[in-house]
Length: 250
Ligand SMILES: O=P(O)(O)OC[C@H]1O[C@@H](O)[C@H](O)[C@@H](O)[C@@H]1O
Image (cartoon, rainbow, N blue to C red; front, side, top):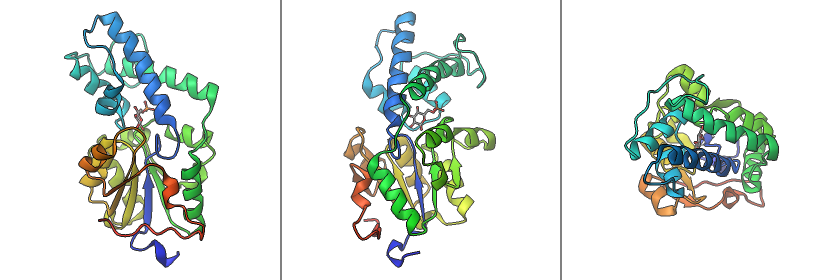
């Protein structure tokens, strides 16, 4: 490994909004589903775009649904992950949104952000171990659809989190599980995250360098959540020499 990568020995990436523009598809799917649901239920405060960043972004499907419903004073039974979309349970409602997400991804496909792909390729060439930590149960499918699955031997996603009982971001559990897989301490690990819940999770896990990626969350919100620094795109770390220098966390 190139010495310039020191002091970090591992990079963990969130997926949606960091490696692929799928946060936009999640956003659209949540908006479509909740706008209809709130209209049907006669909820006074309609769904707004800020709701995504405040209650849904970066969280597991069930936690996102429960958070947003709670903000409108609505409680429904949790139900079961396999609940049909006709059921008014947390899972039934979440699965309704997943139908919209699935449809869009199937129809439109997905490409990685060019800057993210360039950085991942550069790090791969330098021999840097890399993993993905995503709350989404669709993570492996998205990585495959984007053609970048093979870069990441470890993917801690919504499926792994459910199987292993890992708490949703902003708890540090999912990122800690990622670092543990590589047997590399969080202090020697870089995290890239675009959601405040994810940044807060990496901060809570005492990761060495937490880089917020501002895709609409707002730089100050990411800094307030614990990001050491904020960038607009991962291409900021791509160099013409092929050597990535993260530098120390400020
Ligand atoms: O694809 P799933 O399992 O429904 O997961 C949804 C969540 O996955 C996360 O990765 C996204 O950041 C969230 O915004 C999204 O809501």
